[in-house]
Image (tube, rainbow over all chains, first blue to last red; front, side, top):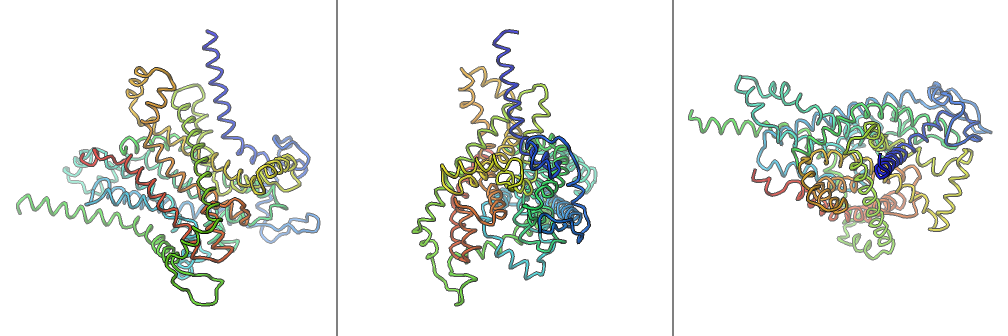
Length: 290
Length: 300
């Protein structure tokens, strides 16, 4: 190999390593801390773990109400982590299902049926992103209270879709709009109903875009900490982010870090499984939309 | 029935169905956003405050006027502009770099792609907790001395609170560059390869190719990334705000409005303040629409 080629190759390798390290280091760091014993957390090397243990993870599941011993004179209380986990699964599944359902219906209407002014409908839906979220939760709280839904998981399932729905409608409708008309029309001529044609033909063709919309929704709602901790107050009704936010981190730093990982790892795994599909779906939507 | 009217009837049914299918999405959005938005606009013209005994008075544009005359506002506005510019540019530069790196095949590309994808996929709601406690750790941990030293160095050079602000900014960039990188990678895949190939033959240097070909071809996707990072980036800040109980020394418009509403109980000025961002975001949105729904497409 020529020296120039060698130089270019090693530069490329270095760049790849640098990018990977930059992206993964914070994730790695939090993972390593959660595997440490209290002793190693204080005296060990922060970057590595020599005696990995799962005791922090086990401690998260100590039944509620049982004291977990003292630090100095401070009692370490236990947290209903298992309940948080269940709540999180309920909220996330509900939100993703609701968002995708509403987005697919709206996108089909805008992209295939094209009512008058469909472009403007699409723009208006997307434009809701402009509404400043800063203090919107104050009036939102009034509504939630008036409906008697405070401290109820349903609030999040209803509020979360607004953060992901506009992008999903935009992406899906761009994709539907440019699917050739003929693919449905053939089925309609054969006597199939619109619904059959949709579920049998259009939906299977849209799998990558649906995956992209789903992953976008999951990633967006999994980033919310504010709404969850504002609306879910009692600890048995909290999701993991809201619950972890209430932890006494000075006492339970390792526990909190373990909780972070327990929430993050499943979501990261799900996203990783669909990562390629996510890009493919985005590409499909852009190919059609741009 | 003559065929003409039959087609009409069919089209009418289609339109009816379209509105029916649109309704769940519209109801969700309007149900959650309409009242709060109306409340925010109305409140921005009043003196509403939970801390105030007397009734709420309509004060017209007073809240807006007071903001514009307040030096605090101009400080927050400056920080907002700088923060938005710095994070957006950094996210775009890094994201574009990631996308260009991943656009060409090499050994282990799938793994590097996953690494680039993860900062965004990693749930920010909890990573922000980890991030915050890593950068301002409890005293007992092994890295607290190092982080403490860094914190005092930064705060000493730039003023108290600089470290916290810097760490929020870094977190924002870390997460945002991942999202934009993946978005732009999808964008590059959507550009026909012939266009890139033709441009490669035509252009003289890689640098020129980048500015004359890559950037213009990706412009709609760059705009989409910028818009989404401007509107969603605030969530990260709000998260940190919640965690630090508002110990933010460098306010941006959003956090300043938060502070006015929550700590000072001044809902009127807070509403006015957060609405002041809308014209700028709308302008960004119009640019985005121009780039995406180009006029020649409307005819098609």
